[in-house]
Length: 276
Image (tube, rainbow, N blue to C red; front, top):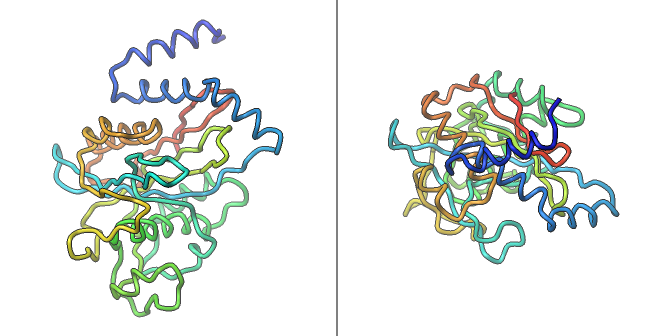
């Protein structure tokens, strides 16, 4: 049986681990979950019932060769209410239409089946596909980079996909691999069930003049080494994902879609990890 002293010892050992390890970063999240501020937030939100996490998707684009990988990140506008000024990956909430908009290709069967087996609520292939579509749409909106291919149809009739229409490309989701999944702990007024995808920069079908065309939600877009990003103004869960990415690239530089993906969630005020 695990006692409270055992758990305290485990967390102390994790915090004593060097920064940049999963154990250290998870322990930081547990400290945040059990902080007076978070406990107060949980009490306030409990009065209005539990907040259901909203599905969201993030895309981590990997550029460069082994030992010198870079990823695309940007700083959230300081005027935004959620994580202002934080260094993050492009991404956002899933729109209702994301599952029905046409794409140039299909998500890999391995990736789609894994999502389908782990979706909350009533799982459907449309909902699984919507996550991948949301990831490439958010990337286009926030950076101007298009993960897309030419297809026998245009995107002019689909609101929210104007960047693809202007580039003459349809969204491509066949190259997406699942990196991880994480659900925001209870307490904050906004909670997300975020699916983190990754893909190679080879999948970029269009790049604006000057490299980026930011929307204003993300600023200071840059290609940065994951190790350098951890030392930047990143939040706890972002650092966990950066460590997971570093480990993934060491063991799976080709980003095989069948590679196991971690799932982070909170239970009884502990931040836990399973594999999906």
